[in-house]
Length: 185
Image (cartoon, rainbow, N blue to C red; front, top):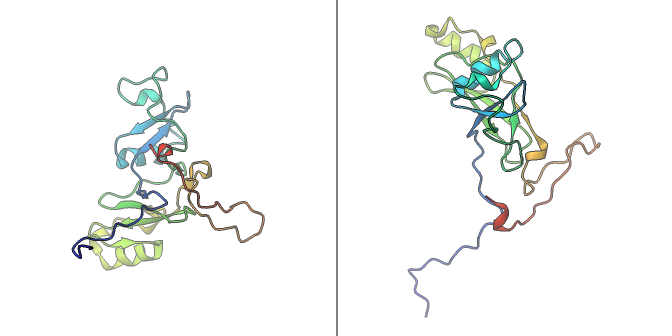
């Protein structure tokens, strides 16, 4: 006899659950090409905003040199995205947020205002600034909504990608694959 208070167990999901947010920031040394972890989003944005004129080198971090092992290796254990050099720093009080689409096709850039409002476009930012005179020193041009490039070779195998609309197969479809637990570390 079945106990009506027990729930029927649910079958395990065939694909792992992943957090689709940025959890680490890294910069690549311009001399040795090793990746160094950057402690905060603000520090990362500072480095990125000046990268062409002031390349990042390992010795910028205290007690680190090119002789030290890399902090993190570029591999497919995580999905990597590469930001455009010299993207301006987010103005003080605002926060840049990137949201990865479920099909890993791109990241959508948003800015969170000091009042907590989430804005998606430069026009929305212009309207916000106009409606909030306390931010008159901030220009909509201070915000770059360009999304970082997703590195195709680090997208998980289980992700089903949309076929490209131009028919050249540059964005090939990936079939959903069941993986053994040993492949998820």
